[in-house]
Image (cartoon, rainbow, N blue to C red; front, side, top):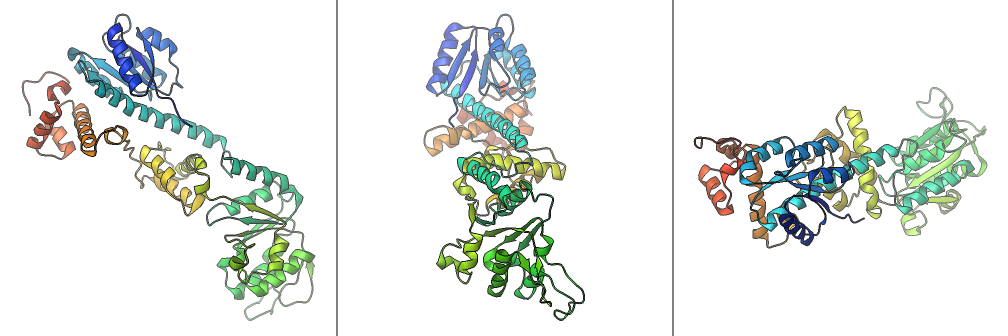
Length: 454
């Protein structure tokens, strides 16, 4: 859904206010102009998803007082201060106190638009993070099949509709798409919820073991069978049996499984006695068992016996709108498990979420969230500034980007040359050459007047 970029613009100078409003509107912003900070504060709310731009020198409530009031309302709301030359030390202090940026008069129209764009991007990330946290918290453990897309809504409705019917179900989906989650929900939402939920991955067991695992055995049934074993099918009696990767089940075992589905009884290895079982079978496959070419040696009659109801789980790439919500849920869960604060989702991570193909589906997304929670993925919040948000040729955009980096470094270090050079990692001569090329006056960033440079 598209978002309207909004600005609250506060300046008591009518002509300057109109000029700034025109500049911002040409840059694509919807502007709400105010002649006083008091009027703007009365109209402002914590859920305002835009940017605030305010002059410092104003009658009544000045810009610094207004900034502190806004910070009390929402410390994450970006405030850009417009300053006269004599107000720069105060503006630098405001930056240290949390103001987003300051712009010294006189300023070029492009300087105002660039700062507003970057602040708007920051605000957008803040509001997205808040919305995702709220949505992730609302997605409680009673509804682990998270998603707001129509296909996921239909899947949840179908699950609730058939959960209590005892019908056998075939679940189709790619690796990591959440097939066991679907099987678990079918069990939890059914009258069998008090019975056992027994899961078996047919592809993880060798052919010599799988029949014993499924049907159980009597003592002496084969070499090494020294005592009776209850198989997975009998253990699931009264509950649900989940057979994952059923396409990997050996042909001989398929014949016996077909008998279980038809007669609801088992014959353990080493005996001719049959035992009744009360089970519901949920089978999962990562291939299309309905396609003879993909089915291979999987029995057609077993497929049709399982295929009473088929549920298909779409891959993540087909429901991209669900990815941020799923990620926020996994990130919160991972942070709780690792004893960490939930990190903000940066622009870098957000772009990766929406551009990556996610071949491992939900499982891969969950592991990515764990790495972000641990801080081993790039979640540094390198938001796109000048070169990626504005037009122009690549060299022009890189020039703007370099200028902003220099200004940010000078602001962070109060104009101190030595510490600024250390943070940028460039020689002193290169530093001064760049300041001259970009028209940046280092003294504008000095917090107090100094007798000379370092």
